[in-house]
Image (cartoon, rainbow, N blue to C red; front, side):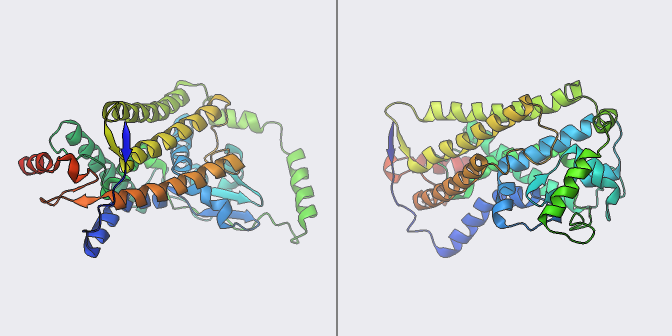
Length: 357
């Protein structure tokens, strides 16, 4: 396999770039800003460094997994449970999305849904519809490419985040219980007279010591066990889907990146980008599912240096991926966009396929 690079986007005009970049970033923007919730600050302040890992698609998919798992294992599910499950709590130095914080804070909700599932006339349903339409479009594009009905070699800039749109369909299992209709008192844990850090830590320690021994029993009464068929089915469904997508990427790499073939750098980056994301996501999910730490809606490692490094690495790789793909994208004589080099002589077959379709 020979990896080659050629700058060939110089003929694309400004208005075309606006259209292409809009198509390129629409799945990414929708997936991230629909999937990330506004934090509820119990005490302390949050910097962007503490929040940035929530924008990692791995964190978003974990949230969908945890909410689906929590709802499916709940023996009883109220609108207060739903409100507290969707909230993301910041408690001075750490994020908390545990079952314990849900039980502790749900009765303090200042705003909550009118039902224990989302209303059809809600922002959440509209967001799910947008994500679903983008995912369906991406799946459709992949299918017609696989069937050879629209052969466009390469991966033009407008398609860079199409696979992410497919991954975004993992929102659907949790869609009925995703809501923005919740509110909780902000800064409530600062102490009765404010107090300094030592007072706050002492009070929190005393509260933990006074915590009833029956908390775990209470949670067991509210939820079916983690190893019940409900929980197992949810976790297998999410992990199985991610594994299937990984296998598809590996098959595509094996078919198109064989010995003696010439491959554009953008095509190689497409494979590297999504394999990196999928493998890291599957590995992370597997660890916390195996160690029985999947009860929280906030991925447990969100504050770890390794996960932060992974997040920054994914952002850096995204930038490189977009820039290189933009430089290699060109317009063919029939108006198609591709990263295939003109010297490869594929324009005629692409245009015939496009016109026939």
